[in-house]
Amino acid sequence: MKKNRTITRRDFLRGTAYAAFAAALGPSLSGEAKAEAKVKVVLIRHKNVINPQGQINQRILQRMLDQGVCQLLGVENPVQAWKQLIRPNDIVGIKSNVWFYLPTPEELESAIVKRVMEAGVPKKNIGIDDRGVLNHPIFKSSTALINVRPLRTHHWSGIGGCIKNYVMFVASPWAYHSDACSPLASIWNQPIVKGKTRLNILSLIRTQFYNRGAHHFDRRFVSEYKGLLIGQDPVALDAVGARLLQLQRIAHFKEDKPLDNPPTHIFAANEKYKLGVSDLRRIDIVKLGWMEGALI
Image 1 (cartoon, one colour):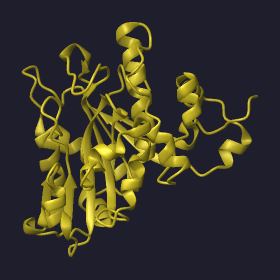
Image 2 (cartoon, one colour):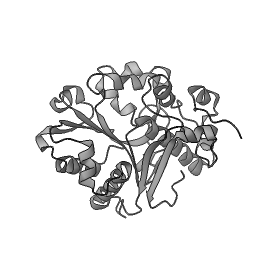
Image 3 (cartoon, helix red, strand yellow):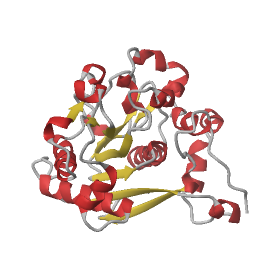
């Protein structure tokens, strides 16, 4: 049996990382890998969260969020689960994403706000923003952050996920585009965000699994995956997300179409910045709900 290893930036540059991803999600693990601590993420899907008219069902989405957070924290009651994440005296910033073609669903933002308020935080101490976070009074004084955005491919960073969603917390986001955005995880050490993130959510309600060029969008390459990926480790969520997008490309094109840039920032976040775990063999994916066509 081959010895397990962390999937590295070099793997992506050699074009072998996705093979390593596939191996990492396989059933066989060495004794050494089994002994390592695992990071838990929750994948939950519901086939009716998007109705025939293309609208998101708020009630179903709230239930998905509740079930996912409860499973993540091992708590039966969703309000009690959120009380483990948020204190009544917290000032809570919900870092969303407003990219026109595939923004964070408003229904998901509302579901989060509902539970944060039920955890005891008054509405005046809750803010939702993306591009204006540096000047937003809630984010400037925040004690807790919820990181939520859709999963998609991205011209500069390979994928847009949890790690990259904090790029608006710096005054010059373009300064982090070098080397396929490998420095992105360094932003998480900025005082405005360091140590504040209580929960990360990748919206998989709709995902963009392929693009070419900056700001490219084509509805042919959008999947109605109807899911959420929830966890406290942003690197683990992005590693699973990168694998999902690759599997969606294979399912659509019958081959793995390459991205403009490989998502090397995920592995830099693990190896250089110690933000979280990128090795899929150390990520425990708990699956809930409808799993037809789940791919992972």
